[in-house]
Image (cartoon, rainbow, N blue to C red):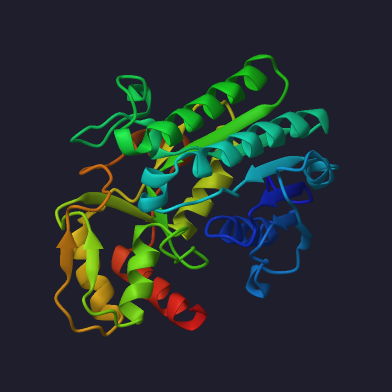
Length: 315
């Protein structure tokens, strides 16, 4: 197998995507080092080397990448829609510094392949599943403007390393990711885990920001992790690939499912005066199917039930 015996760093190994990536790498014979800052790596990931790191500290970055063959950057400074609207730099600046520093120090340490997670926020608004080559057909949506350009910059920075034969780069642009180990606070969590926590708390009234007709493509973290490993192995050519489930659901449908699994019998109230994000977001996954054989395996219903139960146990 490609990963057998390789020394692999997974940043954010206690998080939503990093846990699944680290677990898969271990199963495929890699020697895994996982970093974390606040959220420790759970025991179910397996027997990996762990290291607490602050990636705003260059010495911590150097220690983390030393001796590694491959680096998976799965860490991020996350925030919800409210924080993004109120204080966008809180989300942008730390991620920009972290990604560029990790890339630079990985190159200096002799890392062969470097992977990072870009974002669907790079895309301009579209009312259809958007393709990778349409990223510069317009500006990122206004709520995502700073984040979108930060991710675009990181992609371009990766092209510098790749085109100068300094390091092989792999990247993906995922749809909304969900699953176990996700942040579920209103400040740092994304839409689904925050809504799940509030349902489990039996909040009354149960208020949802925006309107129920917002369309999203929610992708399970296990499907995302498999795609990450495949991209690094098969397509480390610094060409972004969309990763999504291709199963579009509305926020209203998602909320109904959350309330069902949380056993919260209440009629949700939608507050359209609160900060909302883009009305429709879907990604075309034709390239992912063609170049890495991508095929999601976890249904939204099964994934949501698992996620609700995990948050119930970890609140």
